[in-house]
Length: 302
Figure (cartoon, rainbow, N blue to C red):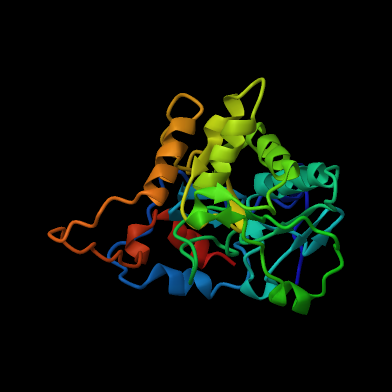
């Protein structure tokens, strides 16, 4: 599998030397995208390589795509990319740099050799064929909770090994696999100015709220969310100067601990189901017409 340049500045220099590729125009609207009812995940999921464009996230985390993605090398000095068969170790250069930095820190923690890195994005981003609603712009990355003892896993081992479950009581508490190193890793990630949010199960957030001392401002970025008991999900801010990237709304003020405790209370004492409540509307698949117009240019690029 071809590896893209590793550091963001190296990618930028290379593109400059080669003429910069096809820059995504901020106000470009592709007429081919208007009214295109094709299911976006099928089209983007079939693209095996990134576009030959200047690197740029386009649209929102759950309704966008990415131009000029870089590939996280399958194995680095302090990480390994997992589930290589999915071809989801692609992201914006800033995300590649972040993983290199966070994994180097992880390697300093007791019992950790680095990180096992889960899903990032598809080569051209966009909706995934399975597993995620977000991860569309190259700014999201899942980090497994495992403390790696080896960084020489074969491709087959990376398909077979499982991420470890850290929750107890359906996510209300952490289990005995949770360690101070996990808290230190999430704290370090949350203190990184590139990070917008980190999603993890509610019990982990409450455990960190209970143990954190000194400066607690980093807790604000740790957000409780379902299904994040075997990995934590890091979301980066839109890079500076990225006119096509749509940021999320700001995080509410405060450390968010009361909110996390309310999640835990709901897990331990769920409200009774309302028999008169209408069934939830199923979420339909995004079509190409619902994505930013620039995404058609991403698909059309070499």
